[in-house]
Structure formats: C-alpha cells, structure tokens
Length: 145
Image (cartoon, rainbow, N blue to C red; front, side):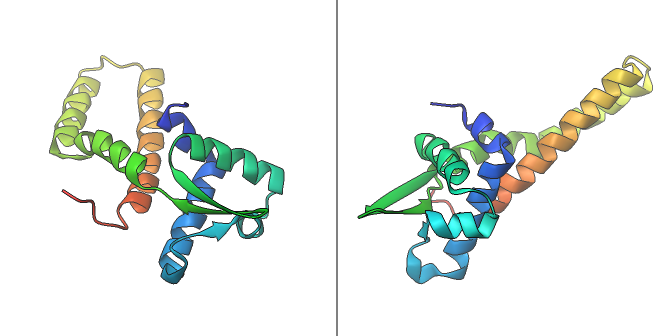
C-alpha cells in the first residue's frame, strides 16, 4: 500500500476527494455515494484516469466502494484522513510556532544560505497547502473521541 502522503500528494486524487466531500455535503441522502461517471463529469477527466486514481484511493483506504451490477459508487472514508490529521496536529500547534521562531533566530544569525531559506520556504508553503486541504476534508465531520 502506498504511503498516505504519496496518495494525497497527487492533485487529481485530491480533486476526487473534494468531489466526494462535496457529494457528502450537498446530498446527504445519498450517503455520500457518487458514481464513477459523475466523478468523471465533475472533473472533466477521462474515465480510465479517474478509475486509476480511485483504485489508489481505495487501496489506501480513503474511499469505500459499493458495486451494483456494472456500476461502482464511491464514498469518502475518513479514518485514514483522521490518522493523517493526528500526525499533522503537532506541526500546526503552538510548538510549531516556537519552532518557526527558533528558525527565524537562526536565519537572523546568518546560518542559513539564501538557497536554504528558499528551500525551507518552499517546503513550508507546500506543507501549509497540504495541511489546509487535509483539514478541509477532515474538519467537516467531528471525530469520535
């Protein structure tokens, strides 16, 4: 099974998760289920491409599928996303702010080169974008405690 970070790193798979979330929110009577053809229409992507990405999402446990004859209906499975959120939380808490302050003090001392600062900034931006997308998907439903 692929690492969940590799799975959610792909923009098409994130788009599919977004479509599943949208279905869950806009049509709760559907149980969040949506057909492959509806996903294809929503994304404007080919059916083979969507099916390939749905297989990866299914193998990662991020989606569940119900088969009905020739049709497949997918829905979001939040459990792996909740585990991802649990991993991300320490990075988004006050401890992360303290780490950022420590990094800023190191930068002030001139220990990081311009390339190192640019690289750190790129990583920070990518992490923030991913954290925001994961939080948007996970944060829609309260987690059981």
